[in-house]
Image 1 (cartoon, rainbow, N blue to C red):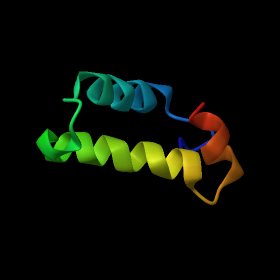
Image 2 (tube, rainbow, N blue to C red):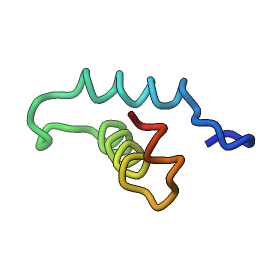
Image 3 (tube, one colour):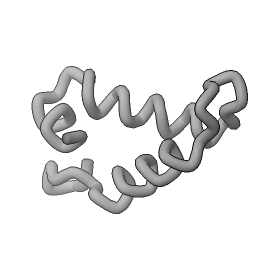
Image 4 (cartoon, rainbow, N blue to C red):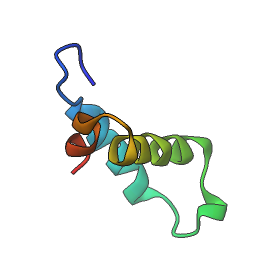
Length: 56
């Protein structure tokens, strides 16, 4: 989130691009792909309501 509680859309799009480019099998994912997956999961399933709405 940015300082004004707005989602960082550039960061969200960057994570989406990483995940779209990732191999189909997570066995072949690199650290950057796993980090993007983790950030996306946190945005979707995190405790903050704003985090969930920002991911969709």
